[in-house]
Length: 315
Image (cartoon, rainbow, N blue to C red; front, top):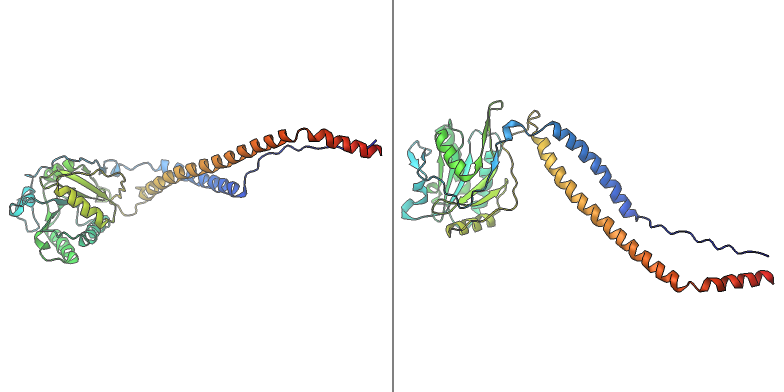
């Protein structure tokens, strides 16, 4: 008598190649991330940047009677730029210092590039005020920077619309604190650390909009000015703060930027990996259920096949 052996192999789900490849790639990235993060933790946030940033003070008034000097040395207050020619206008407010090695010029140039594309003209529909955060700022540097930017802007009447101010430490701090602009002096590098931001205020001197980065979308500037002119404020959801430092190995600037990128990348990767695995296991679960249903429907056929096999063997 011959016996027919029926071997039923247990079917285990296998990960598709693309999932396996993705997992391997993500594990490699995780190793890189953990290494970079460990290195970044060694280089914690340097003291020079601990008090640098922006706290949005939407609808908060800035002190318009704070005394300053314009680029010619003439005593002025902020109020006269909000109520010039008996007309109230929104004001674009920036902070910088004119011996800044990199970022200040980038921010101001980016502001000019964006404002050139705005239909409104500074000095007519709005004003621009740039306050130096360096109480020792010279009028010569201030004037040179002003002339350079006005030439770049290139519109008639702008000469009366962009105002560069210098002032005492107390005057600068009063306006910066009211605006939520945090800056700090680094004595070791002899530089001022500050965020990259352009602010817009309402015609009555209240904070209305914060725009971040080293590029400013003309449409964002236009809408910000329009909203501010109507006394409305807009909260910024996404912030990109770039600190005013050139490369400094001891300060760990690039390490900090890498850490942020790795943190965001790690979160994105976790979401992608979870989604891929969830999709795979969902498919496998459905396939397993289908197999069970199919096996249940064919359950009575096995004895018949076995009988036929035995009959053949007997013959």
